[in-house]
Image 1 (cartoon, helix red, strand yellow):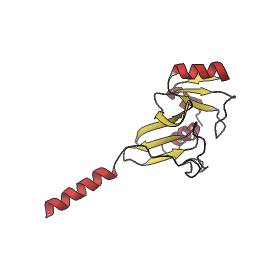
Image 2: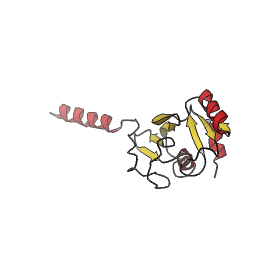
Image 3: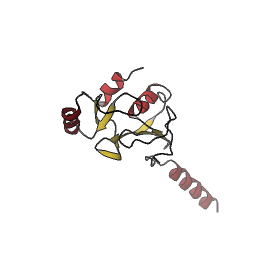
Image 4: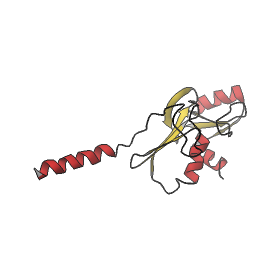
Length: 144
């Protein structure tokens, strides 16, 4: 009987620590950083901790500012950003290429958009103008 009890506890612990993104309920969920309602599918972002807790953001710049501020001592497992060309589709933010363009407004005014790869970002730059950044560069660009 004790063995079944302990197996049950272990199973619950393993299931409760699932490290995966949560679905963003656009128009309902609030940004962890600025508390605005998340509505823009092209600029949303999400962090998931190593313990499986998800933090949702209305803009990539909110996620970056959160990493620099209230999340700087938190162990993060997943860094996710919406692909500008595939609204609502989250991708690995650390592998994305970023474009800051005054022609593309983002929710918090940084004019920051994420693209799956450098070629997609370059195509957007050719269309909208702007400056291209890597994950590391965009964090420095947005330093508070």
